Every structure is written in C-alpha cells, then in structure tokens.
Length: 255
Image (cartoon, rainbow, N blue to C red; front, side):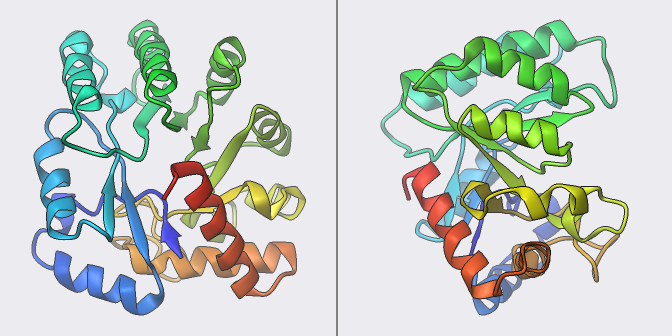
C-alpha cells in the first residue's frame, strides 16, 4: 500500500516517529507521500525525507488555511522550492480551498489556487487538493482551469456521488481516508459506485483516524483499515483494492 497523504513530519510524531514508520512497514505500507503546509513545515518535512529518502516523499505547496494577508510571501517560498533542482517533489500540494473556519480569505485562497495550478502545469506535477466546506467552489475553479496538463487528487474526499463524478470526468482521482470507516461519513453512498481505478488510499495522519482508532492519533499503518472498507463497499478482495490503488498512486505521482 501507499499512504498518499500523511503529515508524518508533524510534531505529534516527534517522540516515536521511527516506531510509527516501522509499524507502517509491517502493515504493508511501501511509501508515504507528505503534503506541505506552509513555510513553517518545510524543514521538518525535508528532515523526514532525508532520513527515509525511498520511503517518504515530499510535496510542495501552500495549504489554504495558511493563506492570510502575507500569502504572496508564502507563495514565493513555494515557487523557489519548486524551481530548484535540489528536490524531486511528487506534487504541488497541499493546496485548495477551506471555508470551514474563515470565509474572509476566500479571494486570496482562490488566487493562491490559480497560481499553484499554473505551477503544477509548468513543472508537470499533479495537484493535491484540499476542499473543506468548499467543494462546489473547488469544482468551479477546476472547470475554469482544466486542460490536458492538469491532473491530481481531491484528498480526503467526502463529497456527493455527483461531485465525485464531476471530478473524475475532469481526470481527477479521489483520496479516500478514515472518513470511509465512519458510520455517518457519507461515503457509503459514493464508494460502491466509483471505479477502483479512480481511488487512492490515504490517512491524512495524524488526523482522521479510522475506526477502530477514531478519535486517537492516526498513522500510516492504519491505511489497511481504509483499504478494508473500500473492499467491503466494492465487494472486492482487499488484495485487489491494494494492488489497484497502489498502481493508481504510482501512475499519478510518477513513482
């Protein structure tokens, strides 16, 4: 399995990160993809990648919750890293829209979204999208920006079947995490109807731990619980789910 979205560099893992990574390997995780947040997370993320260069791979982007008055300065740092040949990033991300906490920065978030999509096209990288309380706005922006160069994944997908189909029609994958195991997560109405070829597995650790660990710290080794739930919804063997989602992840991120 590949955990396609994990903040394993988070300070929540500072005391036992090596043990967490070992448990991930024992659970069958072969790679972990790490989304950036903003300038404050870069050093920690690179530190984990440098210690585990084949196991943990970095992305570069600006999270919408970090888009404030100074977002241009943050984006300058993102662009500086994307343009360097010192790092091989697997994606532009984590980027997107988040209107859950604060809607006042929506214009800046939309601008940062467009700028980062342009960089993804320039550097031939996929985008890793965050959309919280902003699915319709995200789809509208993608409709405006889509072309043959734009590809990516809507991570932690929790939208409707109609929204899932709209994203898939634009060439996007859906990142499925712990919410799939929640009784009222809503994905029971979506996952039975989505081709396995369009799904990626993720944890978004340390957040959104799947059942039976809901409410506790999430970790990459729990990717298997997500795979089990996808297999259940699609009436497939878990090994088929693991093989196809791993192939999807390798294809999207050119691993």
